[in-house]
Every structure is written in C-alpha cells, then in structure tokens.
Image (cartoon, rainbow, N blue to C red):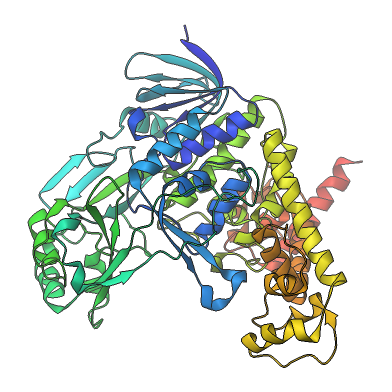
Length: 633
C-alpha cells in the first residue's frame, strides 16, 4: 500500500529538483519532492554564484516561468556584476555572488510556500514500474516508504554512483562532500535499459578569509544598482526586493612557483594519475588542465569569492583540482596574498552517472519509459542555471501529462531554454554541456531584458502565475508598449537634447525631433530622453530598457525574427515517431540511422541532427508526403 499518492514525484532537491517541483505545483499538480536531507534543499554545491554569459538569461527565463532561482538570488545576493557592459545592453549578462546559507534557506522557504507541494526526507531506492517496465507509477525509499505517482522526475545531480577523488589514493563514495551517493536507483535504471555513461566534475578548495592578506590583492567591488533578477514576482513592479549588504571579491594569480609544483605533482592528481577516465567540463577546467594544456601562459587568474555573511570561508574560483590535499595547500601558499593561508576544505573531483539525453524527447521524457522525466546533471549538463531550466520544463510537462494536457515544447527561437533542450535531445553530449550565447541563432532577440515578454504568454496559458503575478506581468507589458508609443509620439527640443547628445559624442539637432529618432543614435539612452522631455516617469526601468533596444536595433531584430519565422514553419512540419527511416532509400545511410535513433518530432529538429544534409531534408519531405498520399487512398 502506498503511504500517499501524488500527481508528480520529484527525486532530488537541488536546482533542477526544486524548480521541477514548483513548476509542477504551479501547473496544478499535487507534488512530492523527496531528498535524502531536507537541510540541503537548494544547496550550492560548487561556486556560490548565479548567472553569467547566457546563464543570466536562463535565470530570467526560469523566473518568467514562475521559478525560484531569480527570487532566491535576489534574497541572497552579496555581489553583482553586469558582464558585457562594454558591448551594449543587447548582450548584457547579469551575474550575482550569493550568500550560500541565505540562498539555501531562501529556496527552501519559497519551496514550502507553494500549495500542493510536500517535502519528504528519504533516499529513493527504486522506481515502481508496470510489469513490462514501460511505465512508472511511483517510488520506494531505503527507509521502506512507498509513494504512488502519475509521473516521476529524476533530478539526482552527481549522486548516482558518485565517487569523490582527492589525489590518486583517496576516494570515497559520495554525491557531494559529506553526503552519500545513490547506487540502488542507478542500478535499476541501467537494468531498465537506459543507456548510461560517466562524466566528471570538480570543485576547488575553500580557505579561511582571515588568513588572507587582502592588502596584497586587487579588490572587485559590487556594482549593484537597481538590478534584480526577479521582476515578475514583486509588488509593485518597480520597487526592488531588499538585498543583503554587499561584499567584495578579490583577484590574485597562480604564478610560476605554483605552476611548477603542479607540473611536478600532476601524476598524483586523480585526473592525471589514471584514476578517473571520464570527461570533465571543457570550459571549467581543473588547475591541472590549465598548467598542462597551457604551459606558456604566464599566470592564471584566481578569484577569492566570499561564501556569505555568517562565515569567513572563501571559494577559490579558478583552482578546481583533484590533487592530494597536502599538494593543494602547498600550491595555495605560493599564490600572492595566500602565503599563510589556512585551507578549510580540500578541493576534489567527482565522477558520476549520467544518461545520454538523446534518449529523451523535447519534453525531457524518457522515450522508452512513459511518465519518467530526467532533468539536470543526469542529462549530461553542467551549471546551476542549466539544471534549473531543465527542471522547470520537466516538472511542468510531468504535471501536464498527469492531467492529460498537451505538453510545452520551447523552440530555439523562443528562449535559451529552447536551445538547451533542443541541443541535448537532438545532438547529445560528449562532454558536460554548458550554455553560451554562441549556441543560439537568435541571441539578439532572445535577451535577458525581454524574457518575460517572450515567455509570459506560455506561462499564463498553462496557469503558472497567481493573480497578483499576472497583474505585474500585464503592467510590464503595458509599460513597454507605452514606452515605445511615447518615444514615437513625443518630441524633444534642441535645448533638452543638447546635453544628452554632447555626453554621447553625437552631433546636435537643429530642430525638435521625435525621441524615437534620436535614440537610434549610439550611446543615447531612452531613459535620458524621457527625463529631459519630462515624460515616462511612472514606467519601470526594465520596460524602458527593452523599449530602448527595440527602437535602437529594430532593423537587426526584424531580420532575426524573420529567420525565427522560417524555423517555426519547419517546426510545423511534423514527423511521426513511427516513420520507417531505415526503409527510406532516398536518404543517406547516415541520415537513416541517426533519424531512426533520435526520432525527431519535426523537420526543424531533423535539420539539426548531425549528419543530416539539406538534400536529406528535401528527400525526407518527399518521403513523408508520399506516405501521406498512399495512406489517404
């Protein structure tokens, strides 16, 4: 007998799990989130930072879909930087350092505020399958508890058969330092026929900030102004939520002496000593990788990042390592400012199971098992933000499936989440996947400032907003529309524009012109023009920024949106999952094999399968149309 029954059960309560649970609950499902330790809900296992290039946009997209990450970040933010400021607001990327303890507590508090959502402590040991193992209907735990569910979302991060390595001689089972790994569930998933592989990631040592000579280091102060990640969840919209007092980061470098020690001791590293064979993230290399792969580099930058207000611990960003603890300390003490440093925790590498994501469809459902969804690092990704984004989509679709409703599939033209998921399920991964702006064909129109405008219609349609949140979203849309209208209707005088144009290094106007005309000039801000003309004082900063970009780069945006429309048309050409690709002789052998393995949902997805050529796509259309004609006879 089941102890309780739910529409959706989420296994794991990290960044993917918490977002999956909240999305499912907001969509009207009864939800249980089961985790081995309730106290570690929302734990930041590695870097205490949220956002960055492309990632900051994902945070705002998660927020636009009703998620937790943006709100928790605002509640825990102790330093903020807007990356890419020199390149213009169209490609700005917000990044925030968080108080690790505050962030974890904020996530748990926000999670437990959700109606229809239960938190349960336990270690899931097995899924409850139907007799043919083609569908799941619940879970059991090591503690002997059984729960029924219409859908299950697995978000176990690095815990499935996770093994921690510190040097070549020290290793232990663990999904995170101090926490046990999970083996029972991993074995069952493999026995159920899921393809499994191994990846590796790592974390740097932590140090006692009181033992750092800060006077020898370069200080990086917070540049927090009025920025907040979560614009859609505070009333009124233009009043930001309070943030903690801000702290500085500190910059130093790994130089010759430290590099020499690493070179001499590199064989003692778990990664280079042959203990670990799995691939790690290319764009977050270990310090051993940096020294070995870039021997001519003069030095390597290190950021000392505060862990929070209630601790003196610092995170040594840039020194991820699997060297023995004694060698880690020896290297640290060669770094300027760390000559007498005390290491509070050694860095380590961790190897874990993941499931190649080409086994999933675009809803993140396992194609071979009904009602089973995967999200986060188990899909071969790296990063809090990538995990959170997958969690929202998996949890939302699990809830919709439990209610018998149509799923939500985001296209590449709609969001970075659409790019992320399409890349995973179409192309797969050969190393831990990380988002970059370069992965998106639509990075001018898919920006951090317009995430709400892009995704609010989808969120509203499936019921992810409360009435209060909907009113904020509606006001944001009205403000943007009003800002564009005001800019087109309002003239600015020669005298009012004089200082603005002088500051921008632009030529003066000789007569009054519409604000919409003048803001097309470089370095001329819409906010400044509104202030000079005495209009738009009641509009939110976010809405004015987006209106400014829409006016300034209208021609570029129009071309990109035309490209998006073409992609949508390809997406509207469906491909039946039962198409007999092996028999389609007009397609190349490689195309037949790959399309049969991946079973793309539409022509747009098929076009991104590696090895499928434009001529294959043309022939595929003919093959599908011919079969439709024969079926209609």
